Image 1 (cartoon, rainbow, N blue to C red):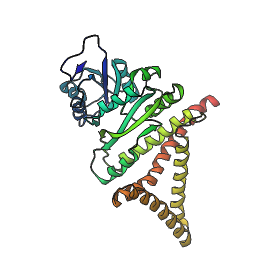
Image 2 (image 1 turned 45 degrees about the horizontal axis):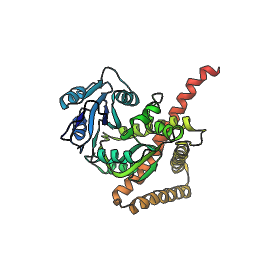
Image 3 (image 1 turned 30 degrees about the vertical axis):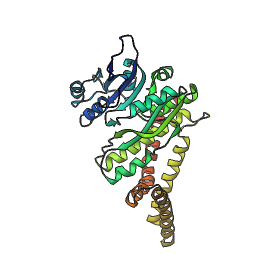
Image 4 (image 1 turned 90 degrees about the horizontal axis):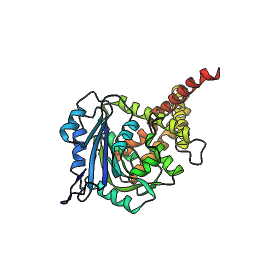
Length: 335
């Protein structure tokens, strides 16, 4: 346990804040992530830094040792993010726990702001802030629009957030029976089973590095997003709070519309093609105008409009793949 105050706490004092950083092959970004925690404004707070490795095959473990963490866990086998977070949670002693991914860098004033906020709002289980994309390029500027700044109660947070440790323990930690989307499902349980709220503060929390190396990475990310939508929606489908049900249906509908438009352009007559191009122009133009009115440049607004509808194909493909796998798993039992 550490403290940045002049007077160290007594041995019996509880830790105020535990930082749990998880990573897998994060050698390029991990040192900056850990240093961002060590350099944050933590005066007067007792804190600890825990790194949990998900089975890296690069130098991530060595970097964590050299940087200096209070506890170094994992590394011996490949594990999912939820399992890594739970391993860190089990080792944490703080009243509050801040989770961070190894490809993020914490904003210096975030921990104190979040800790003060939670201390004043006992009905809130977790608080997050705004993520800022650190990768250069117009595509990353456009993708960051999806991480919209806001202030208020939200449905769920992502991999970076600060929680009351007691709230996480009461909820059983991060669910490990889903491939992805453990954070939204945990938040859904906190809201519905434990009557706790999730809140977003409109201030910088961390910088994030998506690190796409090309269209293949972009496509794979969207496919995984679709699989996550489908899996989490299936868990909540018939409840009073059907998380991501609408998103799943809308993604599928838009993907069919895009495919139908492509087919019409390929086989339709001139009038059909004109109608399709006009409709596509109106849809893209509407999204472009909405984005411009929020203060984004024309180039970013155009890329974001194209991304919004092009991504529906890969997201819907991910949803379809997940549904197909579920049907294949059930078919032997049904025979």
